[in-house]
Amino acid sequence: MFDKAIEVLKLIEKRGFKAYIVGGYVRDIYLSLNASDIDIATSATPKDLVKIFGKNVIIDENYGSTKLNYKNYWFDITTFRRDIKY
Image (cartoon, rainbow, N blue to C red; front, side, top):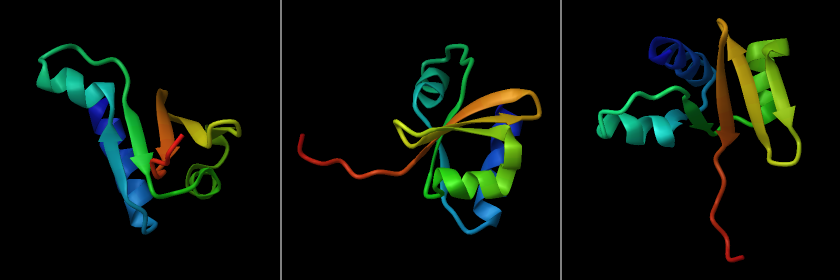
């Protein structure tokens, strides 16, 4: 799965956006645990991701995030956001 995630990052970056593996996968690697899913954070918007990956992207309008099916692997991709006072 990791090699497919790297392919996804490269495809996003090839279009001029930043993209990083984030979240539980990174934590689990450092803790030597088995990781089963990979989350990606990017400067690309959900609409940008549709342009890159086409119909393989499902947009969650409520959260501004997407799910990507890439070579039979699912990735959760979220656009960078700023922390604000709540």
